[in-house]
Every structure is written in C-alpha cells, then in structure tokens.
Amino acid sequence: MVVIEPSYQRVLDEVYDDVLPVIGQGVVATSIHALAQVDPARFGIALATPAGEVFGAGEFQAPFSIQSIAKVFSFGLVLAADDQIWKRIGHEPSADPYNSLVQLERHRGIPRNPFLNAGALVTADRLLGLTGDAVAELLGFVRGESGNHSVIVDRAVAASELANCHRNAALAHLIADFGNLDHPVHVVLEQYVAQCALAMSCADVALAARFLANGGLRSNGSRLMPPADVKRLNATMLVCGMYDRAGEAAYRFGLPAKSGIGGGIVAVVPGRCVLCVWSPGLDASGNSVAGVAALESFSARTGWSVF
Ligand code: GLN
Image (cartoon, rainbow, N blue to C red):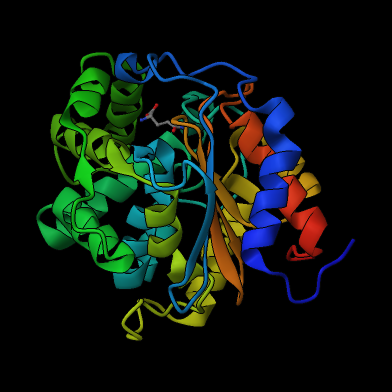
C-alpha cells in the first residue's frame, strides 16, 4: 500500500517487522579483525527529517563502525571546497569489488568513482591538503551536523585495519605512481583508516547526512554546496554507492545510498528525509542483507524512490 504522508514511526516499526526473518543472515566482515567479533543479528534503522526530527526502530542509537559510509562525508567536504576534484576522481560505476586494483591501472591512477577505496584515498589526500587534518575536519562535521559531540574515531578499529592494509597500500602506491597523490602514502592511509573507523549510530549518520536531502544546506541553514553539486553527489551514490551491486540496489529500492562493511547503509530520499540502517550480516558484495531488505521494505511501503 502506498502511503502519501506516512507516520514515520509506524512505517519504521513495520519495516522492522518485515525484516525480522532476515536479520542475522549474511556474514560479518573479517578483513578488519576488530569488526569480525560483531554479532550479525544486530539491527537498527533511523530516519531524520531535514528539520532534524529523528525516528527509529531497533538499536538505532547504538554506535557501529561506519567504514565506507565515511566516503560520503569526506567526499562531500572536498566537493564543497573544490569541484575540480572530479578531474582526479571519476563518476562511473564499477563492476569490480570496492578494493579492486584492476581498473586503476587501466585508468592511469584516476579512480573510477569516489566510493571505491581508491577514490576515497584520493579524497582523503585532497581533504588533508585543504584542511591540514582530514580526520579532524570530518569529525567536526559529523559532530556538528548530528549534534552528538561524543562521536569518536574508534582507534582500536583503525589500528586493526592499519595492521593489515596491504591492498589499500597497494592502491595508494599505484595512485601515487601515476602522480595522483600529494601526500606520502603512509600519511594518506592513516587518514583513510581513521575516517573509516568513525563510530556513529544510525541516528547520528542520518542526521549528519541531511545536506544530501536538503539541497546542500547544513543543519544551521548555511550552504555546504550548491544544489547542482548535491545532485551530482546523489547521482554518483545511486550508481556507485552499493559496490558492484548498485544496479541491484537501484532495482530494489531506487534511492541514492552508500554502504559500509560495518553493515551500515545511508540512503537519501531527496527533499524528504535520510535513512540509515545497520545490521552487520553482509552479502557477497559487502552490503548488509537486512539493511537492503529494510530499504526495499521502506520504499515499497511509502512508494518513495527517485523514480
Ligand atoms: N576500511 C574498509 C576498507 O578499506 C572500508 C571498506 C568498506 O566499507 N567497503 O576495506
């Protein structure tokens, strides 16, 4: 049934009921040792309106490791300051996994999009150049937008990733070899893993991403970026944000979204709201099984998508 003006709380409660049978399906990411211990059967979903109202179901206030969701915030901050970044990072989807080296060699060190690890490494490098401390900039942004000043970088998760980051190091070295990094590889890697290790709740993420639903306005009403740039950012999320299953995600729920291997997904309903769902059991591409199911249920129940 299509709901025109939904009661958000009721819809989220129904979505939670819909996905109960799939919560716990999938496998927890093991590439970062500190994340391998998380229970795959956890679940939370939050919805934030542009005005900052929050609705939620399940463990929507529990912090989780946002991992690749950080790519949306860091790229947003870079794009807001420098729209020439598109010369260093493309905006085409990739049918390869998020940490693949294959296309990077072929494209001579220009990552195919900002939501692959390669793209996020160039983003971290540029944000570092713009601000002197990409992690502090990002932390300040998500704390300010979410209103939660206890958001932290989980240093144990960052250290755990840094201790085993051969593939990201290989990507960074290849990018540097093609001249697309301004800073030393080890500095960029440290910044990158720290960004991925942000611990935030579904409510925090949904609130912090409101600029995507709000035409580029920050929570205090000031402009982060022009509407045309938000359109480009949302379009890039739609075609690139769910790894090599972006087509499947567009087919199932039709919203710009970004996934992280911590089991979180942020999704944008332009002009209406931002959703964040978290459940650590992942499918083979690294997307949360219950998270995708929840977004599909939300879209079906509300009739909302960008199509
Ligand atoms: N930090 C993770 C990595 O670099 C992020 C990957 C992800 O969430 N897709 O592998």
